[in-house]
Image (cartoon, rainbow, N blue to C red; front, side, top):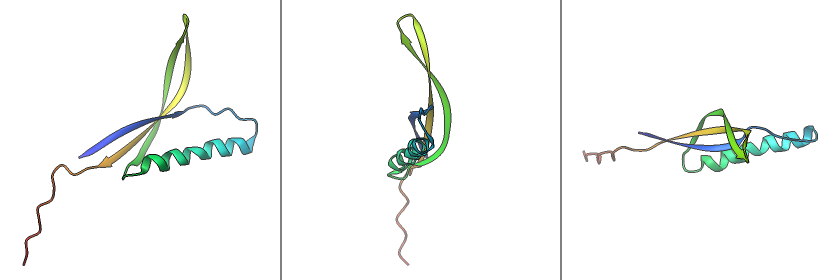
Length: 83
């Protein structure tokens, strides 16, 4: 059986120069490594627009949904028979 978890990640990066862009985009690798602990595997990243209400207006904020999957045993394997 597989179980899934979804982690929100920024969908927009605001930077001043290329080195800052490389640093911020590279930090996504840290998120993936942290979330992979325990056998989780990143299977996809998909854009999600989130609307946040501010007064009577809505502000669109881009996010990415990082989808991780993990295989878990549905039942324990039977003990191997002795020969």
